[in-house]
Amino acid sequence: MNNTDVIIVGAGPTGLALACQLIRYGVDFVIIDKKETTTPYSKAIGVQARTLEIYEQIGLADKLIALGAKAEKARMFAGGKVRGEIEFNELGKGMSPYPYVLLAEQGKHEKLLYEHIKSHGRDVRWQSELESFSQNDPGVTATLKTDTGGHETIKAKYLIGCDGAKSLVRHALGLTFEGSTFERLFYVADVKIDWEFGHDALQAFLMRNSLLAFFPMTGEKQYRIVGTFPEEFAKDEGNVLYEEIEERIRLDAQIDFDITKVNWFSTYKVHTRHVNKFSDGRCFLAGDSAHIHTPAGAQGMNTGIQDGYNLAWKMAWVLKYGSDERLLNSYNEERLPNADNLMRTTDRFFNLVASPDPLLVFARLYIFPYIANIAFNLDAVKRFVFPRISQIAINYRSSSLSKNSGTFKVKAGDRMPWFSVDGESVYDRLRQPGFHLLVFMGGKTEIPPLPADLMAAWDGKVDSTVISLTPEISKIFGTDKAFYLILRPDNYIGIISNNFSSASVSEYLAKFTT
Ligand SMILES: Cc1cc2nc3c(=O)[nH]c(=O)nc-3n(C[C@H](O)[C@H](O)[C@H](O)COP(=O)(O)OP(=O)(O)OC[C@H]3O[C@@H](n4cnc5c(N)ncnc54)[C@H](O)[C@@H]3O)c2cc1C
Image (cartoon, rainbow, N blue to C red; front, side, top):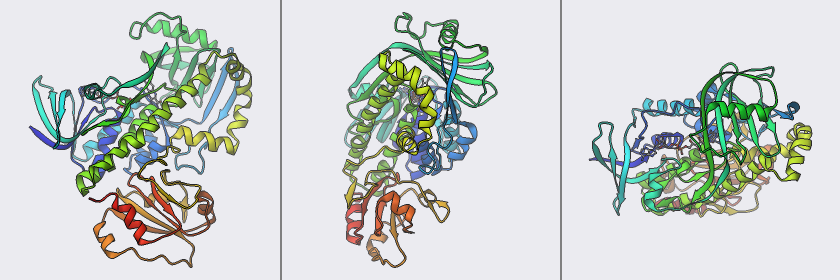
C-alpha cells in the first residue's frame, strides 16, 4: 500500500507537465504509465506561446526552444507550382515573449519534462498500468498491474486521468465523450526529402478537398508530412502500407521530390469530442482523455498542458493551504467551455483548409495564396490570429473566480498581458508559485498598506509589486488611472479594479482560505 496526495495516470505530455507543476507547488504525487518510457515518436510538433510562457516559470522554455525550430514561413503550392509565401516572422510581436509557433517533436519534449521530474528526485513508474479504482470520502484507491506482473494498491486524495483518448479513467467514471469522427483517414510520415525547396518553411499544398503539408523538423532535410486520403479510400487505420501513403503524397503534391528515408509513419482517424464534465468526485481528467480535435492549428497537446496548469495550483491550495474543496469545481467550470470552444474552432479551421465547398475551394486556390502575405503583415490580422493560435487568448472571464470592477480593456479572467517594465519582462516578477498583487500607479498616488494580519496569514502565498503606470501599460489596460490586480497562481487575473482597498483585496483572497 502506497499513500500519496495525487495519482497521475499517464505520462504523456499532459501527465508529465502536470507532474512538473505539482513539483513546483510541493505537492506529493505518484505518476504511472503502462509504457516503458517516453514516446519515441514525433506526434505533436507545434508548441504554442502559452505553453512556453508556462514553461518559462520552471526554467524549461529555453531548453525546449533549443530542441526545436521556429516556424517562420509558409510556402503555398497549388497545381504543382509555388503560388505564394507567408512570413510569420514575429507574428505575435509585442504580445508574448515567444511571438511564434515552435516546432519541437513530442518525443524530445516529453524527454525534457521527464528529465525535469527526475532532476527533482522523482520518477515515473513505468510499466505500471491502472486496472481499476474506487473513490469514497477520504480518497481514491487505485489498483495497478506492475512491471513484474503483480498487483499493487495505491491510496491518494485525488486521481487525475491523463491517460489519453481511450481513457480508462473516463470510462470508469461513466463520463460521455460526444462529438464526431471524420470520414477521411489521416496519415503522418516523418521523412528525409531531397528537393529544390529550402528547409526554412512549412510547405502547404492547397487542394480542392484534401489536406497536405510538410513541416520542417530539426535535422537536415527532415520533414513531417501530414495529409488525408480521399473519402472513398476504403482501408482502416493500421492496414495501410507506407507505399500507399507515398503514392497519395505524390498525387496531391504534384511536384518533384525524393523521399530518401522514412523514420516513422502512421495512419489515424480524427475524432472531435469532449467530455460532459472534467471531474467526478475526487477524480479528474486532463488532456486527450477529456478532449480530442483535428490536428489543425496544433492545439491538442498544448491544451492538455494548460488543463494541468489550471488544476495544479487549485489542488495545491486545497491540499497544502486548506482551501475549500469547492475550489476544485472551478477546474470544470473553466476548462469545459474552453474544450467546447476549441472543438468548434479546430473544426472550422479544418473546413477552411480542406472543405469541398465551391466557394471555399475558390478562395483557397485562387485568392488566399495571393493575399496571404499582405494580410499576415497587417497589424490587425496579427492581433486577431496570433492570440487565438498561441492560446494566449484563452480566458476565464465568466468563472466564479473572476471579479471585475471598472471598465478595463483587459478583464478579470484574462491571462496577464505581457509587456516590459524597465526593459525587463513583467513575467520575470511573476514566477513565484503563488498569488501576486500588482499595483499600477503614477508617482504621486498613495496606496494604503495591506493589513499586517492579512500579509501574515498569506505569508509566502502572495507577493506584491508596485509598477509605474506608463503610457504603454495604460494603453494595454485601457485606463490612465491607478489600478490594481490580483493574479492567481496561474497568472490569470482574478480581480481588476481602480478602487484599491485592503478590504477588497482581503475579500478576494478569502475565497481561497478555509
Ligand atoms: C500525428 C499527430 C500530430 C499532432 N500534432 C499536434 C501538434 O502539433 N500540437 C498539439 O498540441 N497536438 C498535436 N497532436 C495531439 C497530441 O499528440 C495529443 O494531444 C497529446 O499526445 C495528448 O497528450 P496526453 O498526455 O493527454 O495523452 P497521450 O499522449 O495519449 O498520453 C497518455 C498516456 O497514458 C498512458 N496510459 C493510458 N492508459 C493507461 C493506464 N490504464 N495505466 C497507465 N498508463 C496509461 C499511455 O501509455 C500514454 O503514455 C498531434 C497528434 C498526432 C497523432
